[in-house]
Length: 260
Ligand SMILES: C=C(O[C@@H]1C=C(C(=O)O)C=C[C@H]1O)C(=O)O
Image (cartoon, rainbow, N blue to C red):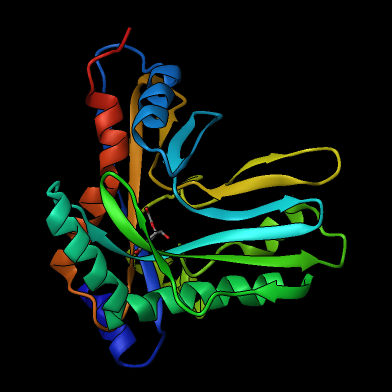
């Protein structure tokens, strides 16, 4: 992470998202239905998914298309919750004012607005983000919308938007190369688009975050993933703590006692 901050400070790029993974082993095969129930119960403001052993509760909607109206929830800029509501409220206010987080957020909004804009006649890009409250973290969030004019399906829009600066960086190609160089991780489907599409092309494609991949060769094993956007002002220790907080939805779902 220190190396990434140095590259950014030297001017090679503006932002890169680096991720890490943990492997969890269970005594019995992991039942995705149990994980889904726990995630759906605990994480209200998210989209819960299970596709081919990829399970998670993502708060980030890459793109939704509904009868010509495309929308995207962009997240970037994060603060951990403490469990003390009054303190969390103060933290939420400081997140909304943090120049480091606002800068990181702006890169993500730009990448989505530029890519979506190529398909849209008119766009609505709010000037400032709101704070999205989740049980484990709070994020700066912007809902971008546009009227699609070129007939693109939701899957085609997702293909244009991926990888956004929320999971890759800015500029995209430089960040992508730095991830390959520094991350040392096979992301698999983590951070990719996950969702559905109907026959008309409408659909919802979330970004597969706060997620885990069941091991196809061993049903008792799952790899869980979490990443953080690094910008010039990033502190490596803070970022590691942030990724720990992002593991919580899957960790808690895996460790919670079974419900009836
Ligand atoms: C990369 C992840 O999350 C992304 C990175 C964020 C950040 O760095 O602030 C916030 C939300 C997501 O766009 C993840 O959860 O693994």
